[in-house]
Amino acid sequence: NLAQQFRLPRTAEGVAVTDVDPSGSAARAGIQAGDVFKQIDGHAVKTPSEVRDALGAKRDRPALALVQRGDHSFFVPLS
Image 1 (cartoon, rainbow, N blue to C red):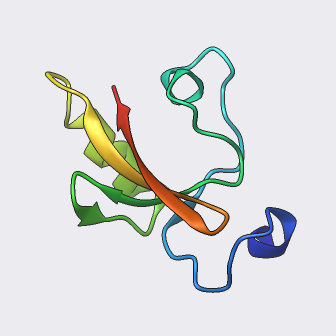
Image 2: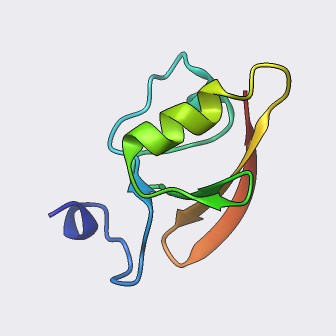
């Protein structure tokens, strides 16, 4: 179970990050395996395709992602 593997709170909802390309934009933004994408630009995401679609639609400016890491949540701009 991903929640146990990454020690996520039972209340975590969203899309869990299982792997990050070390040379990719997510790594440059500080995203880590075990983080959970909760929202992209204020819209809840529940599937990896929703995350991809939301990020792909933002070609002209970064998207603002609400990320949960452990018991803390924070915003990260992603391009």
